Image (cartoon, rainbow, N blue to C red):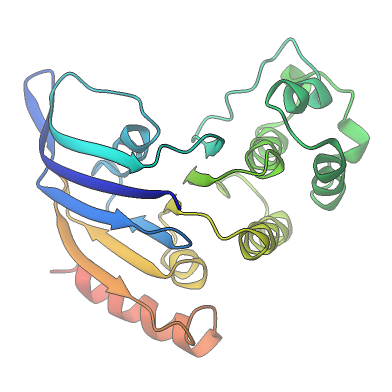
Amino acid sequence: MTGLTVDIRELRLAGRVVLGPVAFTVAAGEVVALVGPSGCGKSTLLRLAAGLAHDGLDGAVHWTPAPRRPGVVFQQPRLLPWRTVRQNLAIAGADPALAADLLGRLGLASSADAWASHLSLGMARRLALVRALAIHPDALLLDEPFTSLDEANAVVARTLLLERWHHRPVPTLLVTHDLAEAASLADRVLVLSPGPARLLADHRLPPDAVRRPDAVTGTVAALRGMMAV
């Protein structure tokens, strides 16, 4: 089964240290959330996990084995604007039946033949999530996947993510600024310091506590305390 190992002594960009030291793993069948102040390096870590190399990296970020079909959602949807919604999914290799189901549940069925360039940002973000889930991924890398969604759509999107993950538990790295979201979706929450980011805490939720409302409330309080250190 695929797993991720991150062991970064430091990462330099334009001569400035922006990360490190940071070391953690994401095991097969595990959801790990990254939280920390804006600009601390959460998205940079996710891009490294996605294989986007940086010349200034001192350390290693590797998968064992490398995922063959990673589902990736960046902060920007990264759609092909000259293609339709349906075509964007087909090009990514999405399962047509699964994609149609996800589009319907996320309110995009009527836009299946619309040009991606005509979508609102919220619609484009929902499409990016559908694309990541509908390829039957063997790993998930999600950078603020629910940002720009209204609360109703965000609830549906989180539910779909959990459903697909339970159907096929794959290693998942989730970047979020929402502590309740991290506590309700993740098995472990990694707390990063202000940049240059280092690992402040690796908070593991007991398996039976994940997604229980009372456990989420307690975890959020604990995470706030860790981030205040």
